[in-house]
Image (cartoon, rainbow, N blue to C red; front, side, top):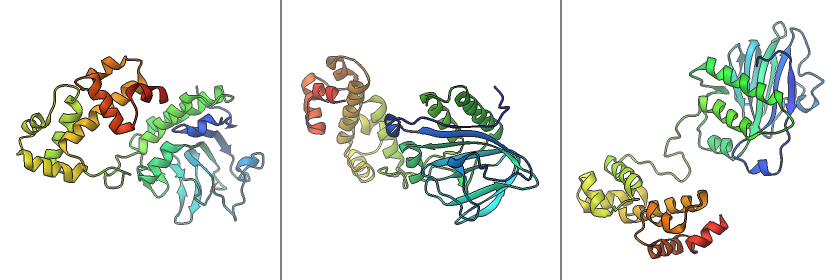
Length: 293
């Protein structure tokens, strides 16, 4: 579906959506003719005076597909040209407008949620000032237009599919977060420790113990144990137990698999070993953990 007429949609946002990873609040496709006033007075939700600028409580991602404009933030002033995407963050003062003699055509979405706020905190957005770094602009534009067309067909419902499409758009300029910047994540530069962690998480559902891991990595046990603890904060044995408990917890939350089957899928030797592990990790039995989640 090609976009042919300008539109703006304020999407209904239920209380449940406030707890979603990402949700859309507004979408639009606007055309401003050369010399026309901007912002447009028929859009009071988005109206602002150029001299005052504005801040938004959410993210705004826009793509210029015709014409051009200018924008300013507290730190930067620049031009918007055809093919430029730009991103404003929650609480960031800004102002933007088309070049009077050119006008512009913009596609835009407003969004929020724990996921993009986490990406912002972890410096995962790959930006040059406010410009996202996009390797495939043609695909980005196609996906942007597809998202807007989807919403335009049914703006009365804030579909989870819209959120998934928005995440696909943002994926164009998300980068792998450096481990030293990611909250709660330690950088793993030790190759032996990397191999040990990978082996544990790939095979701990089977009969895996510390000597097996040491044999696979090819580093003396005392040396590997010391380096492993220094990097991860856990011993090799603790990592094996952590992996098994985490896998069992996911199976209990996400499947209807009987507990006796979870025992073996997670790598525990018996129901009693699983029960003791859950008491130690969560202070409750596997059955109580499943009921609570």
